[in-house]
Picture 1 (tube, rainbow, N blue to C red):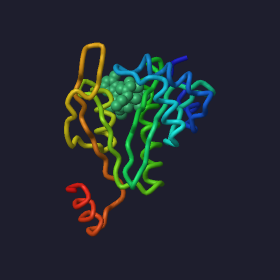
Picture 2 (picture 1 turned 45 degrees about the vertical axis):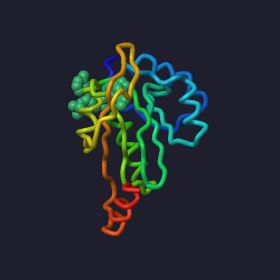
Picture 3 (picture 1 turned 30 degrees about the horizontal axis):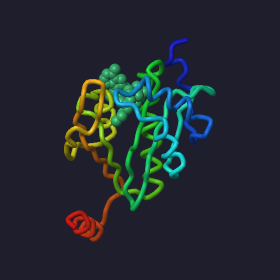
Picture 4 (picture 1 turned 60 degrees about the vertical axis):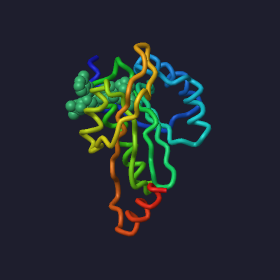
Amino acid sequence: MAISENRDQFSIREMGPDDLEQVGSIEQVASAHPWRRSLFQSCFDGGYHCFVGCVDSVVVGFGILSVAAKEAHLQNIAVSPDWQGAGYGRDLLGALIDLANELSARVIFLEVSVENSVALSLYLSKGFREIGIRKNYYTTADGKKDARIMRLNLAKTSGFEMITEMIRRSD
Ligand SMILES: CC(C)(COP(=O)(O)OP(=O)(O)OC[C@H]1O[C@@H](n2cnc3c(N)ncnc32)[C@H](O)[C@@H]1OP(=O)(O)O)[C@@H](O)C(=O)NCCC(=O)NCCS
């Protein structure tokens, strides 16, 4: 069956301990700079917001968001290569943006490799904008790669909050 025919069966739920094995496996095959499995455990144990995307009961992707002091950070997102291109990554990212809004985050930050044009295209289409470059951020089989730092502004910020934020960042 073509993956697009599974569109209606796609759902997103919180990640559970039993999902870590499959999530780690997806990361290994999807990412050019895969996380160690222990990092997923740390996010999970650390109370980050960890979700999986499923087609029926099969975990086909995941997304992890941290939120602190009204700033959210997209820690990781991936869809299994067999299931890419069907809109699941967009749905996962949309769910994490909605969650950040619900948790009153003002902004979401993320890093993406300068070579990752697919993810970049997704982030741009969701309104993220580049705010800088982190040199040598990723270690890949081909050596170190720079990352784009991207930012998505969420709820409107009052003038007072903007000034407070500017002072905080200049400290
Ligand atoms: C980035 C990723 C999560 C996107 O998931 P996906 O399910 O394949 O993406 P979707 O089908 O939802 O497509 C979302 C957008 O990505 C872009 N995209 C998807 N496939 C693409 C391709 N083959 N070429 C170019 N852009 C593509 C498009 O902008 C697309 O939007 P559109 O369909 O409206 O044109 C997935 O490619 C992935 O897991 N990549 C490896 C891990 C990774 O790089 N994670 C990001 C770390 S920062």
